[in-house]
Length: 188
Image: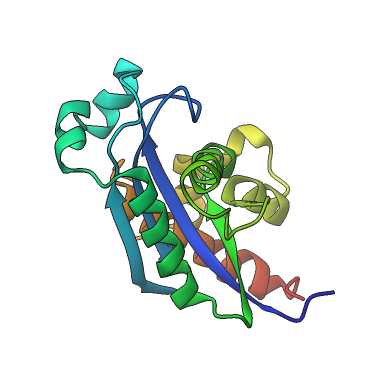
């Protein structure tokens, strides 16, 4: 068993489509879950011209604009890794936390491996939807953000801005933790 301190990091991404490699990662937003004032955000240059029109509509991004103003994927991932290292020194392990974590983690993992020096999060992620389901015993269909928000009542709302959504996710995670885990004594 590891004695390293776990540092929960809420991560949200916006992408040009459903899968990494075929579609570009467009933005990353992240914050320390229990210290949400510690944030990271960047926008990236697209790696190709592939896009799902609905994805770009939701994000409001233009591939042409990001090609001019975004960071190269290498610089973005180096910056993200450097920021993560400020949160979790050698005594800490960063834990990727996401809302529908498989989607966000897949892009982050792909980009860290393709453009960086490996994924600081390792090969796992903590999904808030699954966390909520485990805490409440609800059905999977009841893990939509709107349903969870009805239960835990966050002050923030989701907006499809990666940093704002990372902060929103962190708030939801903290509320589940405090209202459903700590209050029932289920915390280890």
